[in-house]
Image 1 (cartoon, rainbow, N blue to C red):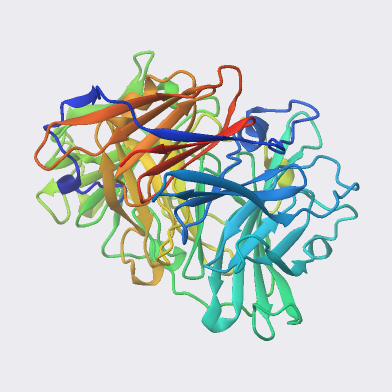
Image 2: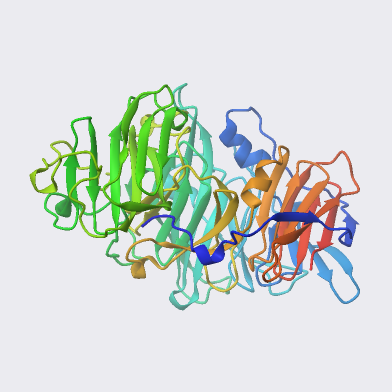
Length: 564
């Protein structure tokens, strides 16, 4: 089973959005010190645009939904909305330390709230600090974390905080950072490095005198900035358009060994050689298929220069067509049984086309895949080359990364254990990842949004130790939002509130669009368009809160739009 949506969370009778006749009320506050923005010294690639130009400079506080933060001038600034009198107060909460001059290419600062009173702060130049935010108008510095010594780096390496997880009962902090560096040659124009750290505190975390130990658990390298990252129960979830290559595991006392689970198309190597629940079949046309009681995986070898745009794949309930857009056909036949097209998908990986089909009837083993073939599963020949269900082996060679490595392929979900081994992998079947939410305050991981047909579906990671088949669940939907966002040519940010009451997106300048959930049994939902007062200032960040507020940040002002 892969990304199979919960049909009860999709409204098939939804007709669309209606522009509301009333305007949303808002309040704005001029900024005295502006917003600290790090611009690129050189333009390297689209990945640099994602890391710098598309960086959201506005940070929410999951434990205080009336407050947002940003970096302005020489301080971390806060804006708090008071709903009683509809006023907005802006004030500094923490004075920034002096800039680190030994950093070659700084990145933008990043904040990550760990709980009601603790916050991580990255200064964008390789420095990482733990702050106590108990006093809202005067945050207190607690400690700095020395990460550069673990990387054997002569200069401090700038990074972004991607995700963090605080385990107070164990005095542990797990942290994931991202950094983007220029490659060594033309084939390796950029290298994205993901570091997974574990910090052990030897005493109360909220004390500035408490010592700590930092361990680098694992390092991954890639050619793309990940679309989503999260630490869930000592496992690392990542959604990326590029394969992650292991740069080596590191000794760690922060976690115990986790027994892995494998999804469709992945299982232990020792089981791949002799398995009674998954059979392999080879056709004379050069494609193979495997099956279990509930699913089928068809694999077709592809030339090196083939991308997803060259593939023509049509999946119907009882018919399958696979080939190239130039007319070349591998498969065109009726299936032996019926499948669920909505639960089936295809993707390209390692120069192979993989098609995942979810059986409807009959369940159990099919004697043949296609209705007009005489191949019998009992006489099928086992594959002589490496089994397609083998778990991919970690790769250490960074020179294998190229700009075009997997840039034309689909995004994929990957789950890694605490020792850095691939635990689960599933392709998104060509579906687009639209955005990820902020960290919720209820100890749940953030959600990521995937376009499914015209809709936008929200997926949330599960506790991997309890997940037998698929480690994510479909938790909510925004009807037709996938289609709507595709029409916004100038959109810059897109997000939603953590309670899924509304979604919003904005253009690069001025216009903000809000989409409400439909009322019960309604087929039409309301859409609002809010226009900012400033015409020539870029939008630098947005945040949607569960209490119906939408914060919009520009270099000149902060605006609060009251949605609910």
